[in-house]
Image (tube, rainbow, N blue to C red; front, side, top):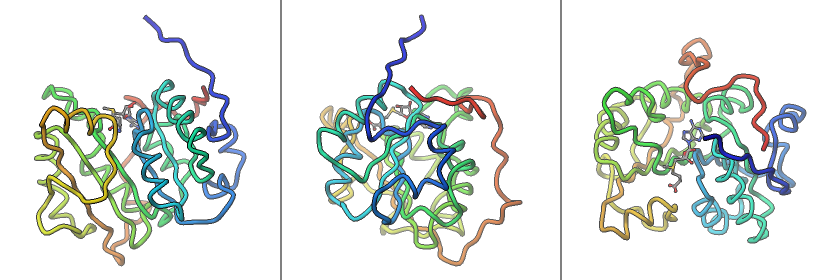
Length: 233
Ligand SMILES: C[S@@+](CC[C@H](N)C(=O)[O-])C[C@H]1O[C@@H](n2cnc3c(N)ncnc32)[C@H](O)[C@@H]1O
């Protein structure tokens, strides 16, 4: 069954054609401020709380899920937030096509799809290639936040991140079960209400660690990446 695509008519929503016609993502905001990206914003609970908490930043909330973008826009508009823009776009596609090197003050990934079956694990977003890709786009002091409810996903990331020369840990342990002040996403709230743990990772780019363009992982059109196809609604 194909799902009906909801048209999004919100001042917070940016379609790909509009973005392609601007000089870059920074141009989407009325005031120049440090730029923060949330990947997989779902229905927008987290980004609205974060933008209220830290108003002196600009936020890009992206998801490939049309209804999620629609609901996120509705929350942003209701909250009167002028510093959040929503894009229906795949993360690696956005980074590769529209973001400048060293430009992101922070990147947040909360409860990404866990792909629990072993044969689907290659589909997980946060892996070695993704962490390398992020380093290219993070500001030299840019931060990376990753929260997951999925033990096995946390274990996989805990085997990479603490040992990566490009990242320094902002917590005393590889991950924690609490991150004071960190807003909860819809999924996080759901799992916390069920008494399940959330694994929080908070890392920062090592300022002088640079990824050269030729070292970037190859981003191939394939699962969830649709080059050149505008996903506007
Ligand atoms: C399990 S939901 C979690 C939503 C939200 N972060 C939360 O914690 O409530 C994962 C979301 O990530 C989106 N997503 C998955 N892979 C993505 C990708 N590569 N780029 C952008 N969004 C993605 C999905 O469409 C989905 O809305």
